[in-house]
Image 1 (cartoon, rainbow, N blue to C red):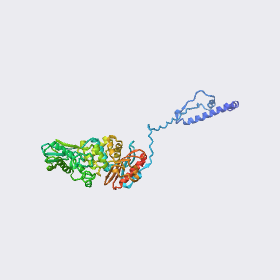
Image 2 (image 1 turned 90 degrees about the vertical axis):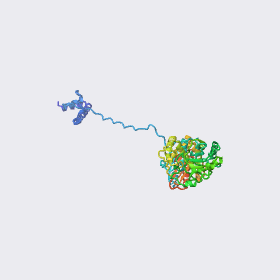
Image 3 (image 1 turned 135 degrees about the horizontal axis):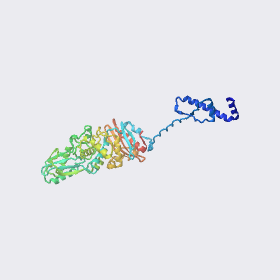
Image 4 (image 1 turned 120 degrees about the vertical axis):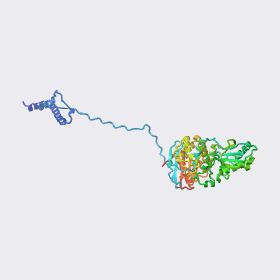
Length: 493
């Protein structure tokens, strides 16, 4: 019997098993060929077959002496999971969508080169800003900084003192100025309510000297250098019209020709005018020889005090200077603050004084400010609007003793330099704005706080700089009224 007939017989007797065995044999042969083809390049992926033959491998063994190879399949490498995305530990709160814009009012050409800042007084959030961090001239808005410095350095209860010194029997006395511009020569009205009087000082001298004779009167204005009494950036018309005096440590009635008039021409020698007034007061008090006593300017030669008078407290002086924007009184507080801080009372000392005090006492960033004077008359003063607006938050909150400043600020349409403003369509904000006005030839300014229509309190500082006219005031009022209407919905756009 040959092999072919034997296989045929097996198929006939076991047709199903034979078909399965044949299929398995065919698969093994094909797999073996594939492995043989790849063996040269993958030698370690093939292992030897088992030595125990199976029924299906018998037919294969008849055709070949080599054992059938077994394929070991290596699984593909595991794919690394994608990195996880970082998630912030705190999800920021939603930012309110504000839609009320004052851009049109801020772009009014009457404002010329406009700079400004508006801050939510409760949260400190900046709601609106245009070049607010750029240092610029402030006009009389600077007086709010001067007041804050004086309240911190001097304290609200501090009083400025004017003395008479001299040795009884010597015939010589000295009137020594302490920076009190409110010292009054008149027994009548003065722009400074409660001002100390020369007549009281003369009466004290009379009491100390008795029948002693006075032959010479020295006028001592050396509390700071008289060479520093007028800044070159100031216009002399401020003096001749009557807005500002020379800054000397000895004067009477702010050196006004009319002590009862806020705006009154000032002299070219405040010290000499004070001396003449004091000599007249001594004559009226009956001091012997006063009518013929000679006047001279210089330093006192005696430490013996024959009499002294004191100003109203600094808190009162602030309440007098802010509503009327009194330049002379502001300059005096600046210079006295310098002296009491340990500096020399010069205008050159003011930048460092203001930077230090406003930073340390009120937490302001003062690194960019430049201070030439205490009144704001100089075009060379430079304070960012953001600094002023931040100070106004503290003023509105009455913190750090600044309630004195808030109470003294003019009120829109009602008091001080804002009494006649906020008219027409801006009248809706009358009574809602507490702010300091400012004006020099090249700037109109306004800074303070607004109690907005929705109850939000906003602090602001606005500067109109450059080629400005009187109508810049109305443009500032209109912008401030727009802020009043927007309230917390004020958009920075």
